Image 1 (spheres, rainbow, N blue to C red):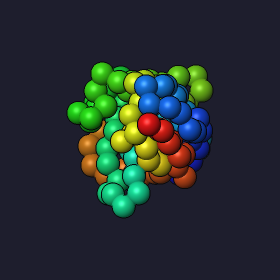
Image 2 (cartoon, rainbow, N blue to C red):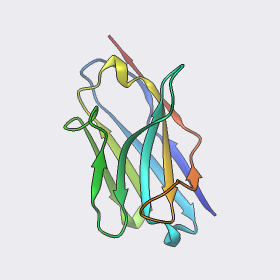
Image 3 (tube, helix red, strand yellow):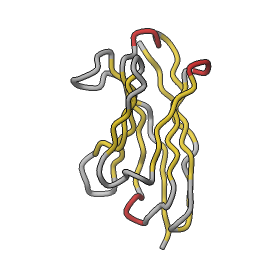
Length: 119
């Protein structure tokens, strides 16, 4: 099992920045990909960004490209989501996820952290 704990959410004005963190514990050696998803009120959960643990390659949703950056700290088994130029439409609960393969469904999820961007 892998446990994921997010932190760093909050309230920020449009144009501002926030950094989310996701600390992984447990069988972290089994993780191949870690990612961020988000879910706004009344909407489906959507993909935001992913990082391949072996190659360090990254992938982003078109809506956040150029504004968000996913990064990791191997020593701390932690990934980050640096969010710049935030917009009100970025308001959502942000979830950290991990999977044991480089493709396919995500096996582990965090509890989520709220990000609210005011206009």
